[in-house]
Length: 427
Image (cartoon, rainbow, N blue to C red):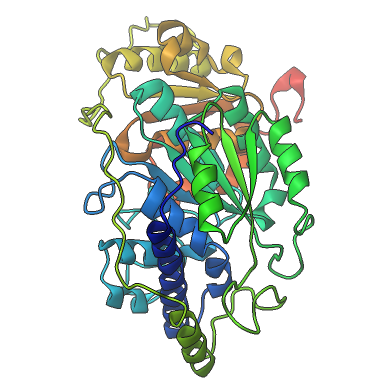
């Protein structure tokens, strides 16, 4: 495949060693905390190693640099391996990992944006890919920059309908700067995932949504390197067959270990076994990004002039919203609008008419629409206004809740609200 250059054996071994160090750090952190998800971390160790130390381009000491590649951990319960990555890279101190889940530590049980390397809060499953879509849309259509967006999902959350709303969005807009990695480790929380290791079914589903889908051995760093190198020209799903608890003897691919830290004695033995596989302690450094993302002015945005209503005039509040939003769009080009195929009722069409390049049609997929807005608003890049019928926002309640946890600067406007709306009835 074009542009793929096989890494030399020294690099491949270094990536294997890095993956095992990430396993060790995740086990140490969760055992110290007395809670957490070490098995969910271990299935993704090679994925995270290859992503952060071979594929992604970013500045370690400036995690929110506008030109950095983005990463969203949709399977947020695997947070310890994300923290382990940033310790491996040198942004966090190794000792900080042992403060996982402590009340006075920034290393919460799931990623949150008060961590400099986290853009959106995750943990409520099924939402990370929608946010990643918003980031990728911003990169492709607003920034026109070379940074890429990577999102790691677990196979359990692939039962969430919101994931497939996001898949449809990315396929429709041809987000070729977006890569989703499916960690197909077979096991959910209380039972095996519905498709278990039938990776070919995942592949067909992804292709039906307009994605390039690549099946790999998720524990082969060489296959992962090649797959990431092939992720071009359309949104790409890397379907990684993995094993939950990989590398933990007696636990690997076993049920009933979800969300359970290893007891101290067991952890010490497992850590020694994994450490014995490491051939070189030398750490890898990520590649630097191209500095091609625009610098935006994040000053407060003010309405350029007051309304011009006349005494006695009657205006529908939804039309007033559309008029004001279109005017606000002239004040600052960070203002964007999203709608779910109701723009002629919410009057967001007035914004689209005057600022067509900053309007995102999300169609009738309100959960994804909110998540996309959250992704667009990361790093203060945009100020998003999201509109639909008020009752339709209720189906995105959890996305709105997670947006609040993310401190996201999104603004939601629901029209036609109330107990009933007359002739259209309560429905």
